[in-house]
Each structure stands twice: as C-alpha cells, then as structure tokens.
Amino acid sequence: MFRLASRPLALSVCTSMALAISFAQPSGPGIFTGQSAIGAAGPGGSAVFDAQKGEYRVTGGGADVWGTSDDFHYVWKKISGDLTFSADIGWEGAGAFPRRKAMLMIRQSLDAGSAYVDAAAHGNGLTSLQFRGKSGEQTYQILTQIDGPVRVRIVRKGNRYTVFAGKPDGPLTPLGPVEFINLTDPVYIGLGVCSHLAGTLETAIFTNVTLQQQTGT
Image (cartoon, rainbow, N blue to C red):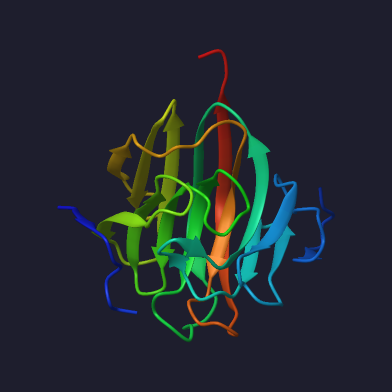
C-alpha cells in the first residue's frame, strides 16, 4: 500500500478580522509564537489567522523541502514532549507547479539543514511522511496517494513519529512509524508552505488545526 522512496513522485490572539503578519516579524498567528523564512525562501512569505473561520492561510516560496536543506515559509512554536498535531489542508488556486507542499512539521531548529519530520500534502494530491534523520542528511519519505483536500496528523511518542492521512471527516491511515529521527526537546512544531519554484509564492489553507500535548509520560 505504501512504498519508501528517496525521491518524490514526478507529478508535479486575534480579532474578528484576519490578522496578517509579514515573514520578517517575529510573532506568529493563532496558537503559534513565531514565523520564519527557512533557507532561501525568498520575500513575501506570510501567515494569516482568521479566528471566525478557524483558518490559517500560509504563503511561502522556496525551491523545495528535500535533499539536505530546505527552502520554505514556516509558522511555529517551541514545544517539548509527546504530542498529537492535526489539520485539514487545502490550496488556494490551481498553483504554478504540482509539487508545491503544505506541511505539518516537527523540526529541531530553524536551520535549512535541520533534522525534521512532516506530513506533507502536495499540490498534485500526493500525501507523504517526509523525514531527515539528522542535520545535513538526505530526506526520505513514505508515500501514499490521496486526492486533496486531505486531513493529516503527526503523533510524536518518545522518538517514534507516525503520520496519519485521509479525507476530511473520513478514516485516517497510518504511515510509519519512523523511529530514527534525531530530535531533542525543545522542538519547533508548525505549518510550512513551499512553492517548489524559486521566486513564486503559493498559499495553503489549514483548518481544524489542533495541538494536543501529553504530559507526565
């Protein structure tokens, strides 16, 4: 049902009004506390939280989240311990390139080559668990094919990371677990967007975003 691949498939608090925040500003919208342009993400990245809709609109550029380093826009908070992080992901518009990525991510640092694990929804409908086990290593992924929009979840328990994916309001299928990702507390958890084309911006829409922390384990 799933297959391990070393390269991606070639398909290609706020008020009642939305709060827009530039990537250059340190604060983050909604439940998040900061945002950053990771690597060579380029200008124009932003995050907007609409409290009435419960919707995060994240805009980012960057050539890719892959290989040994990443370029994307990231809205994040620092956190420790076991957790469950979930969201529904959709896209604004048809997009310039089908491999654009919208991600739920857990990351060791804001460095471009940081170790990380994510649940990535591609513009072509592909959903995957991506991971870089240590800083500067290659990225790998576990693939499934689910037509977007999609609901994704990351569960962290100790050093085990499991991604779940499915249709909104439907059952979620597990990908993983992966147990050799070298992340130590505290970590950066958040929402990321990569356009997959340097100089181009894409916007993903994250709804039903929930973050549950397990303490005392």
